[in-house]
Picture 1 (cartoon, rainbow, N blue to C red):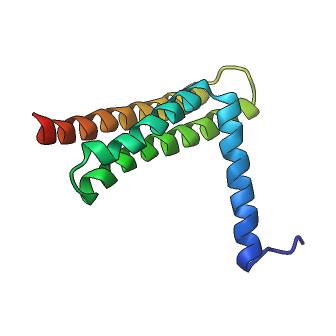
Picture 2: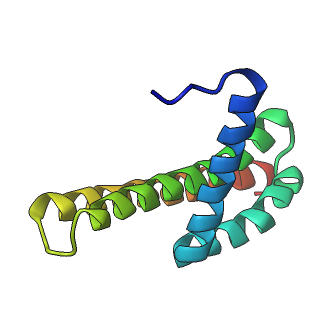
Length: 122
């Protein structure tokens, strides 16, 4: 049996594995790189668009949620591809549902940013 890491050591290893996942997504997924590019622009812009801490938090959270959903979608695609390149209906469903989740996260960004910008500037 493999001894389980505990305490601070577990946190360090968890951070290491998380960073590896982040790097893998950046390296292999063009969509993640594009979304990260927009996040680098939108997160600082949130401090300009939002008028208070709640608005800024909602603006930033919507962008981070897209990145989270994209990472989960990437994980789903990797697992599906791991089990074979042949087409299977359930594999297609899994990939399509992951893609739909990304689309909803993008719609959320447009909704949150649009509503807050409309309220503050129009």
